[in-house]
Image (cartoon, rainbow over all chains, first blue to last red; front, side):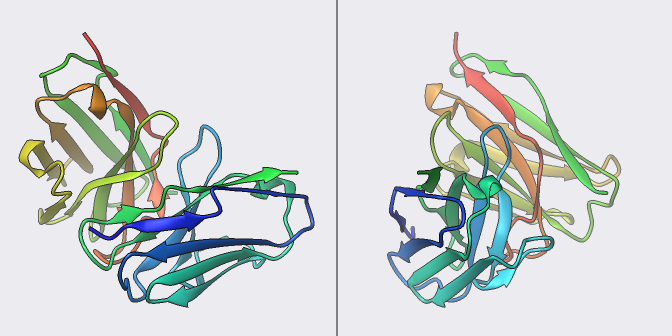
Length: 107
Length: 118
């Protein structure tokens, strides 16, 4: 199965700063890739699909890029509600797999 | 507004069968794909498998021998059955919707915690 490795494991930033989260796949996943946000006690929420299309209702400060094996989620200017855990997902090969998550915490 | 809700026993004994149902309200179960995803307490996400509204399935090989996902379109529900459970199956179980096999889950239930313990 395809292994997704997210970095860093934890990212400490302040509101207003720019966040850059990375996900690397063990082999190419083409564009069948997504980013999710999960807040404590909540289900994951789809942010980015395909890997640069924002899902419905997702603010423009979230953007995704990359293809093949290397992907990036960028949050241009952090809002207080953005501090959460972020997961990447691939569904180019079965089974669908997720990265281990990046925790974005307030500095 | 479409909503998903998981239901089923919260406590299952080791070696027994875990059964969960996801009820889709506010919309139709067709023509979507419907997934189960789980998350052990404090850990990451694991994809379990999906079912198409017409009945086609795709399972995680790590669970395939113990897993059945089924759909009941008349009740707007789909279900998960996992046999011979162990403590490793203790997790928050989510149901979710996606518009295509290769498309990601865009709507999730709130999740239900299932604990495997005697």
